[in-house]
Image (cartoon, rainbow, N blue to C red):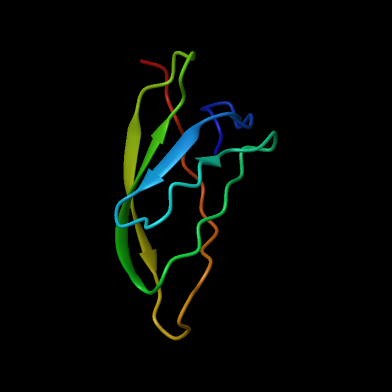
Amino acid sequence: MTDKQGRPVSGCSIDDEGRTTEEAIVTGPDGRFTLYKSPGTYKVTVVCPGTAYRRTTVNLTVPSGDRKAGVDFTITVEPT
């Protein structure tokens, strides 16, 4: 995840609909995070507490083929 200038945004919480565990997913120092999902489409919400970035929600589509798949994508957050 990056800001408008392309800089990584770390420490943001990631929430996805349908998650069955309580394990926290947080962006790392490089702005990256990992979700492992079964094929389908999910809403993923990013919240960056203590920052000026607004809450961002995107649709994530995991292609069919494997029982579980990882998808690499970028969310660009913007200030409120």
